[in-house]
Image (tube, rainbow, N blue to C red; front, side, top):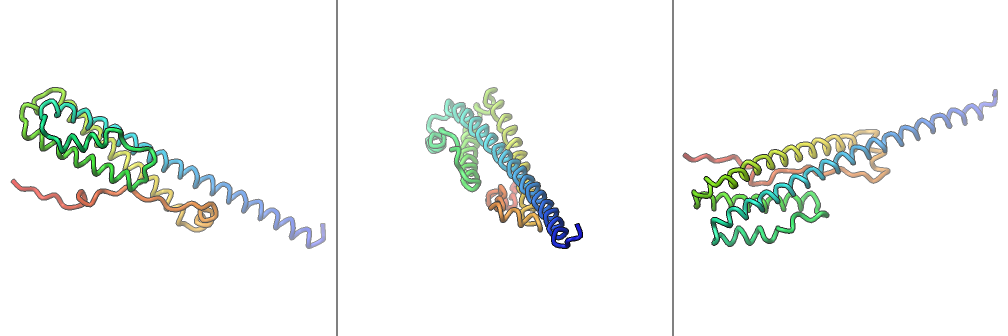
Length: 188
């Protein structure tokens, strides 16, 4: 064992082994974080689907009271099929904006028909919508927290080396619509 070449090869082999173990464990950690992001994105899909279903039921209820609110109902009919499975995060945000417009139209219809406000089914649906909105907000927060954790790892050295080697890129955050970022004007 006095041969220096053998000692150098053993040291290099041990170093290579530890680098390989580090690379594999870092890659696995990044993949687990990516799974968390995908799981959180699925939670947003579930919340959007629940919101869509609840709004559809509300539209059916409102429809019984407001036969001539054609524009609102035409928009809902377009989206009756629900949200397609293969949408990107940007497309999901656009779909959500369209549902927001439908909800706003429903609220206008409700103001025009005071009897509808007293309807027990409608009141329950309004509570359901509030619950759905809270669930959607929680899903967005979870998604953004997971994206933040993944992106922080992807851009941090030396993990960024592994992320680059396995082709992992930063994920985009779920952002609020421009109209909801503006300050709320309150007139009394």
